Image (tube, rainbow, N blue to C red; front, side, top):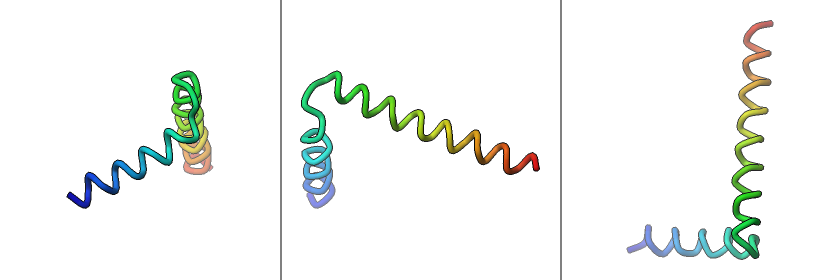
Length: 48
């Protein structure tokens, strides 16, 4: 029950920041770019 409540509250906060489906897509895309950039930087550091 607590997991459902926490998940619901988290989704409410996340979706409040996104007014449209397009906004959700942009947020997901932005998160994907951040992960990709971090992976590339880490890979470059490992190669040094």
